[in-house]
Length: 102
Image 1 (cartoon, rainbow, N blue to C red):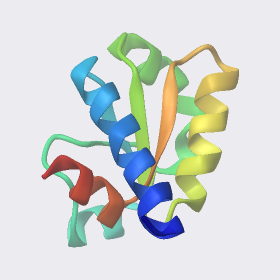
Image 2: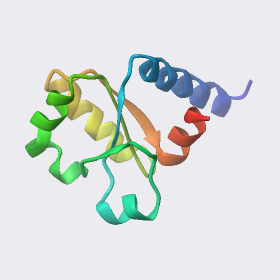
Image 3: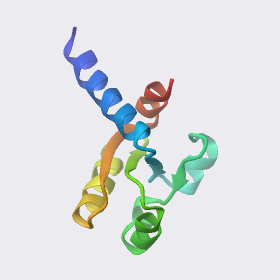
Image 4: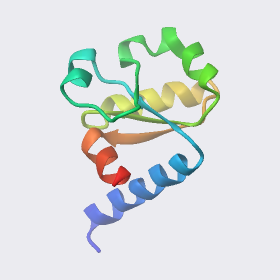
């Protein structure tokens, strides 16, 4: 098993574990990116709005899998959510998320 497979396989397993806990998929990209391609059922809250919309996420009362285009914004999002008492993981980029959902 190569390093790439090891890293992304591990992330995929973590995503699946969270989905089994009825996690919400949080898309932190822009509206334009979301409109171009998104995961069915994902909640859109752009990273630029996340801090001001934390109550919406808390009110979901579920674990969160944050994703973006490449994994950078979702890393920031999961850190923001965790530091505010929300159980969240970084799902990485949309292609990683889609692969994990198959």
